[in-house]
Length: 247
Ligand code: MN3
Image (cartoon, rainbow, N blue to C red; front, side):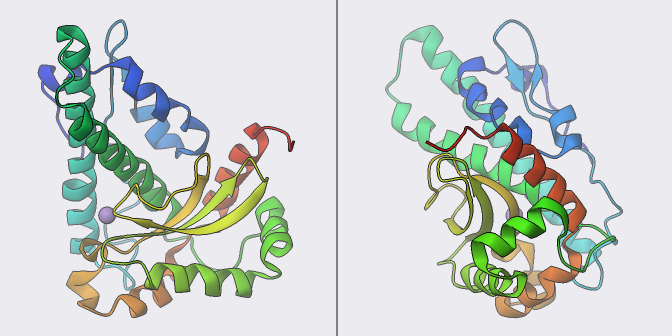
């Protein structure tokens, strides 16, 4: 369900949003169509896109209530937080008062990364899940990891071992032109600059606790049953195509 923004929230600044617009190539099509929207000269806002499948489409791996709360409360909360942060940064530029810049920079990274990762998470899942990736993504996984099974073992191990709240991440790293399995603590920590996530596993407790309680490993082991590899492959094709040539 869409988050309603008031006029105050709609006024955001271009400078901070610019870093996110560079991620347009890896964002899901619905999210890209939903945000950021230009709201006047130099202003942008992010909107919560519609969930691309029914809330019960991921059962039995993820129950309807988990998907509902995760999407309409947590994901929407990060969008709200990002828009508020961008607005505060615009106000700081207008007033010349940058006394809160350290906290605002942290909020920009936290909420901005939260928005990107949740967009990719929900757009990578669906009822047409299962199997293994084909196409260029399948070829690339075999090249960079040896086999799909080896890749998936590393992805699951990384996801399970995240300290506290965070993510398992499969990312295209354009500088080295290779796929990488990474961890993210919170949303923004432990990244490698330039890496573009194409598949992410949310291991914050809000993603699984209603159904799995403390059994994060069981949730991660079941995650493969709801990954839509066609969507992940399409995202890989986009980011690999726009990446710079190897030096
Ligand atoms: Mn989450």
